[in-house]
Amino acid sequence: AINFYFYKTNDPRFLTLGQKLADFLVRLQDTRDGGLFGDTYVSWKSTEHNFIGYASLYNFGILTGQDTYVQKANLVKDFLVRECWNGERFLRGKNDQTEVTDVQAMGVLALGTAYASGIYWAEYHTKCTKPLGALPVTGFDFNNDLDTVWLEGTLQQAMAFKRNYDNYRAGIYFGNVDKTQRSDGSFLCATNLGTAGGDWTLLPVKAVAPTCWYIFYNTNTNPFMR
Image (cartoon, rainbow, N blue to C red; front, side, top):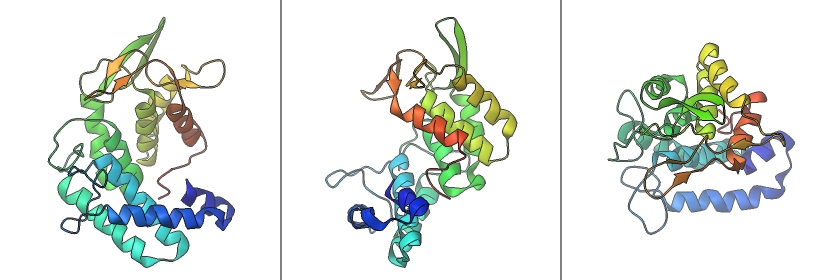
């Protein structure tokens, strides 16, 4: 958010905070493989977190002219490609084969269309159709149990298809989310109660994330900024 604000406004008021956050990410970096740990005292490395960390460090370094952060970001990228990409899709994390949707779209948005096979993999493995009242909604679940349509992830997929110049699929999935908009402009987290692995539950409640991704799609804004 700080990177994007500075990019749009050239207002440096948040850059000091941005540098503190960038330095925190660097402190999480494993010197052995370049990946970012999930926190200071954990041993796991999440693909999702590393995509966000990569984009944060890379863009901060480019925008402020500090090449050290770009170099650190490139080590994160190398980790993602070497440890989390299996040649067809992204894993949930290092040594974690769990099948999830979000990192497939993030791969395209953060690293580019060379990793587009992941979004087509998700279409085969995590796509489903669920009712929202009397309205059938086709989109993507968070994982492969296909028990709900997760609207945030569906919009991420739509954006990734759009970046891969597959406007046909982008339009289908965006259109399915678009028709679910609430009267106050918001979107639900999911069409119905569903699981997302571990103790996280997806609920049909109004949520910030899908509403933001709806704006991103409509304004052609990649929050990863590449």
